[in-house]
Amino acid sequence: MAFILIIFSLMMLPEETEATAKEDFKEKPSAELLGRAESYIEADTLLDKAIAALSVVAQRYYSKPEDSAARRDAITAMYQLGNIYSLRIFDFPKAYTNLSTARMLAEEEGDDYKLASILLRLANIYNICYDEEDKKSTYSLLSEALDRAIAGNNEEVITRLAINMSIMQVLKGGWGEHAEKIARIRNYRFPSDSRNRMICVNIIDGMKAYFNGNFMEAENHYRKVLDFLPQDQNYKERYVYGTMYLLQYVYEDSGDYMAEEKLLRDRLRFIKKLSLDDYELYTYSHFVNFFKRRNQPYHG
Image 1 (spheres, rainbow, N blue to C red):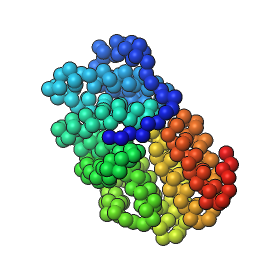
Image 2: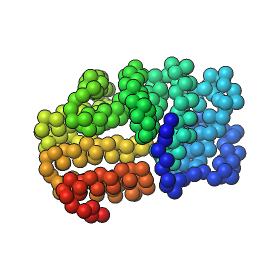
Image 3: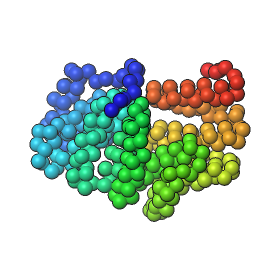
Image 4: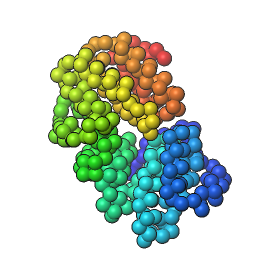
């Protein structure tokens, strides 16, 4: 697979630190390590400790692959490692390796819930590859992720797919090949108290309003999503950024360029605060295109 080489000041984990952390963690039960890793990921400043804890859990599977408990724990550990490497450290080969192994184990265990999350993350990695054949794999992975998410009642993945597929439809300028999948998401029976239901419904209804030229209605739907997103959502920026991306098209096509420029600047402040270099470069490219469409030089 041809990965994009992103040259950033990567948050690589020093070998000595990792070895020391593993020494501290190696006697802890896997359930405790997974719980600690979750709290480290939520903190978003202790990713070295999260990697160390998750690596211990993953290594227990490699040491004893016939142990069913170790296999199940490794699925979670490798999925989380894949998230960290792809969403924070930008080491895509490591992310791909961990996620591919997690996928194999989840398929063997018949765990649709976890498999849906893994497939969604793999699809995102394929989508950033240069190779066109890899990009084609994105669509089949997203389709399978939806099947698994519905079978396993994985609301979070269903919601992320609503955002991802809506962006794909907007970029193509119409309902296109994902219309049937979006209808399946819209018709999914979320529990009445589900926080994902509101996000999902407004994302899709906002897209419908956008395609119908009802730009004010579309803006209202997307603003509801931004106002409602829970503060404790891991990697929350992926929800925020995707929704802002859709909202940008509403402002562009409605001719509200002042609102569009403000939205772009809000996006830039948001991702700079989180030190997300991948999104920062992406936002700058949107800025350049915004001013180019106005025949103006970029104003930083």
